Length: 234
Image (cartoon, rainbow, N blue to C red; front, side, top):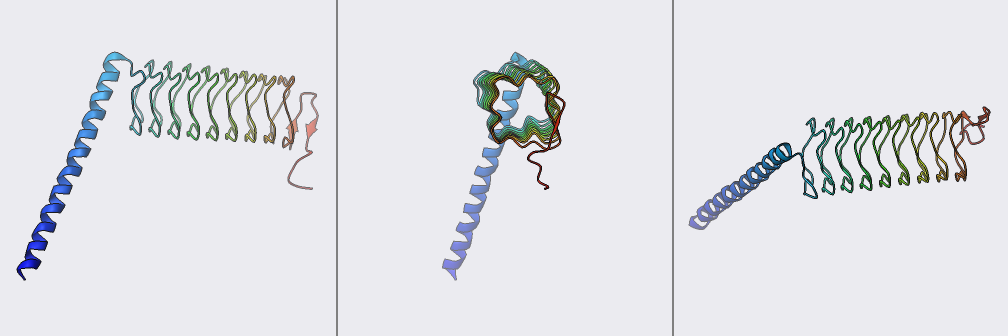
């Protein structure tokens, strides 16, 4: 009986101790989080700092210098990053759903598997950016710079890409269904196995572009002819 009581007492004390440690860790984490945000607001920069898994949703971070920062898994949903510098930043798996990135600099940034659905990226610079398997469905990339960007297996369905510069971009197996590519620049781009169903390619620059096994279905070609050669129906 005494042994059982001791075990219960020990178990209770251990549980309380672990709970205290956990609460302390959480408090420390949020204290660091709050301090970091204050520093960013005060200085307008957080160059090469670690913001991994930080919750930054709905904040106004316009014009902030986050170049080289580690934002892996960060929550930036609906965050205002207009004119922000994210060049070289790591945003793998980050949530940027409906984020505002107007005129943002993302040169060479790592955005593989990031959620950019519905994001506003008009006039942004994504030259050399890694966007492999990123979700850009419904995103606005109009007048943007995506020269040499890697968009392999990315979802660009219903995206706005008019007047966008995609020179030498890699778009292998990319979903471009029903996207707006009006007057886009796709010279020397690799579109092998991409899905261009429902896309209007009139006025699109496709000089020297690779178009191996592209899915054409209800696709208006540069010469005005509708291409249905790879529609799923007979």
